[in-house]
Image 1: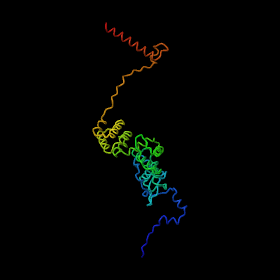
Image 2 (image 1 turned 45 degrees about the vertical axis):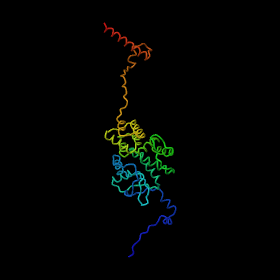
Image 3 (image 1 turned 180 degrees about the horizontal axis):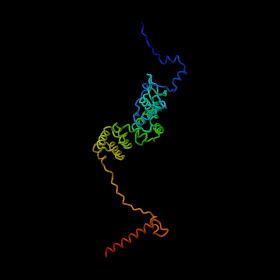
Image 4 (image 1 turned 30 degrees about the vertical axis):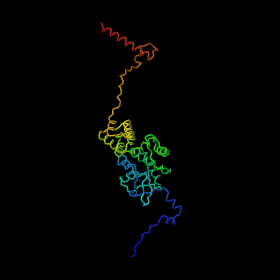
Length: 315
């Protein structure tokens, strides 16, 4: 009995038996019902899928109404699909006990898919600083590749790279952020993981963290060990001094400690103030007296009373 052989038809050979209309139709966007197991996550997806209270609400909604908005995916060469938007919906379907979900399949190149992935997630209500930092960087690099420019990372807390004004402005415009704020988020990618986690947990404030990102990895590690042990966090002024010391090459552990333990200049306390409403004393003064005249008259009367009292004590 002869063994059956399975032959694969190459796409080029298959084109001989399809019309251009058929090939164009295959590229059209279509909503398909796909098995969850065929949906692969987007590579280096920066947005975490958390089983939190919002996820519970999404699961309940899907159990009652189904998936109202299809996910977006692109087909891979092996026949599986790569999710571009809908990672949370897929997880909610799994928790709801579903095996498939509606998916809008699009023909997308890598950079277009990256931009769409970021735009579909960054406007969510709860997005961590680390997620925005990674997402903005991915989108910025994708925009620059599409524009034919090299992926030269933007730097600076408030500066703007001359070679990429349009790219950064585009990211800022699409995310309702200022250009400088987008640059700050991207700068956070220079933090070591431990410090980035502290930013997400709000143990290290955003603007000081941007300044700390200019320290080299060894200095950041020393800084992390110090603030973790002392259970403290730098002010913006302290972070700026740490950055300056790093640039000068003088950020030793002793220098770091002296900056972190320095006390701000003492502020002289204000003298107690007495406030009397003019309405309470105006009746005691001639009509037409200004507030300054009333104050001066009160002071003269008090001074006269004080002198009378002093003379009485001298007798």
